[in-house]
Length: 476
Image (tube, rainbow, N blue to C red):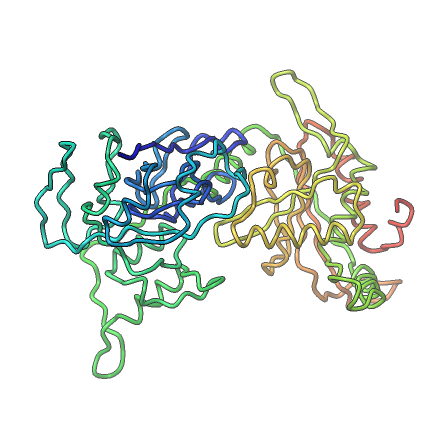
């Protein structure tokens, strides 16, 4: 007889208290190995895969995709014991791979930890087909399996929270779970909801996202394509009797951003100053650096990397802006090191990865770290530690074709530098009107840590370095 163990949502660190189920990686009846990822969850910091510390057969899952669970809530139950005997009774015998499943728990339930052993290939206990409504079968142990309708999802047939977990592995063949044919490349629960509302089969939609990921725009395009064309070739749509309303929960990354920005506006008396700068020489210096390096010297130096290096030099001159305010103690806490955050837009929303110890790096090193973190952000692989601990933020909204903005400070930091697009504009250069590459720089700062003179000095130094990159040579 197998032992059924309950695996609860572990503490994911960084003070996180809840997580949203994005995608189940296993189904009821699957055989899992120790430390095999079983579910993908989204926290207020990042998207992470949660490994299970037990090896055996999954007997129940708690929560559907899109549901939010607190830390410590049940995630799934695993029957640990004779995996081979159970799979044999289900008519699906495998010759190897059960060693990890029979080894018990790893003891490492936190994300990012594990035994280091390679995960065994997942084996699934496939149940026999079930009629439209199956009678509740009784087991030798006196436990009755719930009746299952044809087409019910694994989440719908999972054991509900609060029910008994003393289920023998012998029940796996009679659970009557009808599974979909293969995974669907969808991350967002909102995309699934939109498809359900319009009766679309996600398996018939080709995703245009990374690695075939189905995006909201793909579903919307499929909705438009499903409209019935009239004789003249124009689509015919029937207006709804009442206007539809879509409610989007403020949770996960979007909810964390909303909370942080709201708190920033409530607590920080911010002010913004801005200046236009001639970036022609900066662009020429970047071109010369990349040309001198050659293709064998690694990735090109980006404009963002140069601006980041300029920021670290400016913070060394004006350390007031590399600080935070302890409101309870009524103290300004000045920080010795610069952990530079940079805003990155992803499919999951706005995130701010942090380049650690940016003050010790040159432009090339900063650029390489920015590229690495940006790639991880787009793949949803950033860890909570990579999204926290920043002391100053650089926001390059110029990539969206925007000239200027008044950034909201990334609480609890004291300042943020915003950079608009660099574009040709008429400019007085050496006493004559000329076409130059001009950029607008905006500095939003906490007026508690400094006055306008300090903020203006910081911004002017940044602008001078943009206009005359040789100014940086004094600090290199």
